Amino acid sequence: MPALMESMDEDFFKAVGAEFLATLLFLFITISTAVNGCVTTDNRVPALKSEPLTDCTLDSGRMLNIALSFGISIFVLVYAAAAYSGGHINPAVTLGLLLANKISVVRALFYMVAQVLGGLVGVAIVKQYNPVSYAAAGGAANQLFAPTTPAGGWGMETILTFCLVWMVLSATDSERAVDAPHLPILAPLAIGLTVFLAHIVAIPVTNCCINPARGFAAAAVSGNWDSQWIWWVGPFSGAILAVLVYEIAFRPDFDGIRHRGPGVGLFPGMAGVEGEEKTGAAGDVLPPNALTGSHL
Picture 1 (cartoon, one colour):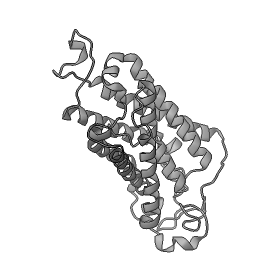
Picture 2: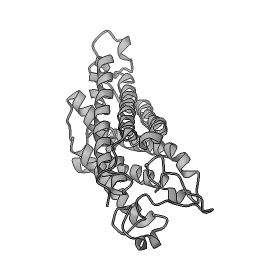
Picture 3: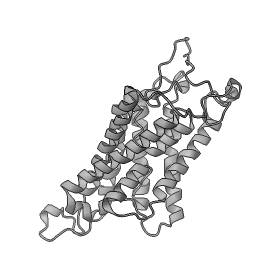
Picture 4: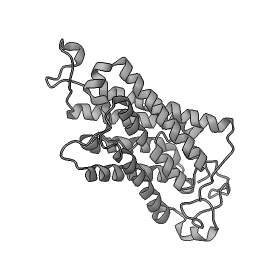
């Protein structure tokens, strides 16, 4: 089972601060992209029109720009924050790593609060510097586009967050890195590409959330609370499912994992002991995984 507490020292609060700052920058960059790229039905930007901007269209070019912004910003910010906090930038990722026993309960709670607060600040800055386009774009808040049903939106968010968290678990597993040392190096890129692909798929359906901090912050600042439950339940459902599938079917040492005794893993008795040193093929001790903060 996950550890409840841990030492709340200077490094702990540096990690929490890194999550706050990374999520702030993430939503500042991505919501700015969605808002500043807002064009009218006659395809002119607000600055070139004399009348107030009241609406904007979502064409394929704008959708690609937004998807690239989300994917590339995750790649860059995960890379920047990894050494401090693991670069979660997403409560669903944090939940997944908590259930996989990579972080403690107290760390997960502090991370989630920092992510939500950072997201609120990032979106609020965008609203302040470009209020006209921000209003026309609906604050880039998540919403169900017709004819998507609530069940369909929940399913889309669950599946895509499953892909994201499964990628995080796969790319940051140090036991896999014994035979594939390139995996942790490429992890930020792989995670960023997963986010990019998710947005290509889901922007026309739900505006693509897969991140409760993004869904809540955009709604709180814009006042658009459309289907808010989906932006929490969907990503958390996907995270839980990803951990279940990865722990049961894809752990590289699954055949022998039950015999190690209780410790790290989704279920007691299905992984090694917390803090146990992991060794590579040549017997060298592996360093802690920067993207999870553990040896796993």
